[in-house]
Image (tube, rainbow, N blue to C red; front, side, top):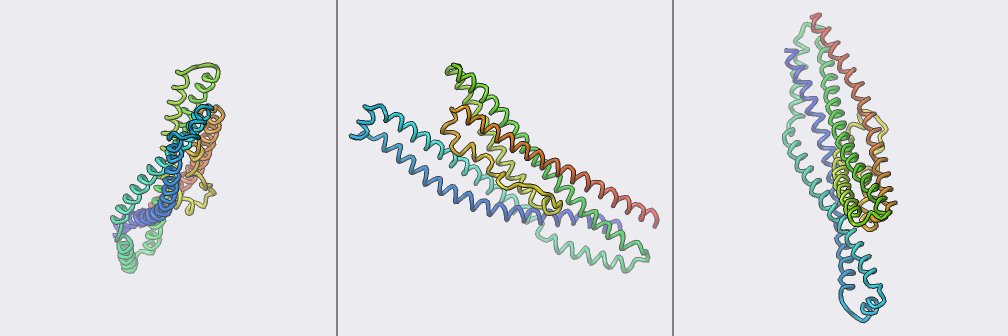
Length: 312
């Protein structure tokens, strides 16, 4: 009887921790969705304004005619189109983010629905445990059940750490992809400045497009990583600074497209991405260290349980 209830205790501890984690993530996603939807509305208004500015320049009038003759019209129109493109890029990024968050919210609702009755099941199991202890003639029974509780908690927390580490590694991979693309763009940009011509410019822009895709992927994975860290930080009492990490790619989407021809802007983007890669690596080192400690604790618990069982 003891072994059966112990096994169920360990399993239900995992489920309880999962439910608490999912609820915490859901609440955080809902807040984040509200924020990004507000941003989307503001960007939509800004985009319409920029589009109107471009349209005004397209219409011929006396002022436009003078500007055309003086050679300034094309320069101003190019600037207005670049500004419109920059807002459009940020708007598209916001829309992709909203779709991803809405998908995550739906998934979490499904997970929580499957765990709806876990608290009542846990209370029922505690009642069975109490009866088993009372009916047992062994003075080790209470200690054995207590160790099973600790085992379940340690296993659940280890799983959470492993999931957070896995999410962090995916962020690192995406950031490294962006670093490689930006380094290639920087190299071709240098060649371009020394007369590389149309081909080098096209290759540079291709690498910038790859960097944009990698940064979106990194930002999406960073969001998942941040959600995995919510509960881990509380449990581990680790000092992990995740403030602003979800917005780390804003430097790229905030006007980078307007002046990406400037070599220094590519280098600034590269430095920022490397900095974020280093921060994620530091967090992962802390999480791996915490996981090793928890594994040792779990081994100690299992060893103590085995000694009690063998002595019965």
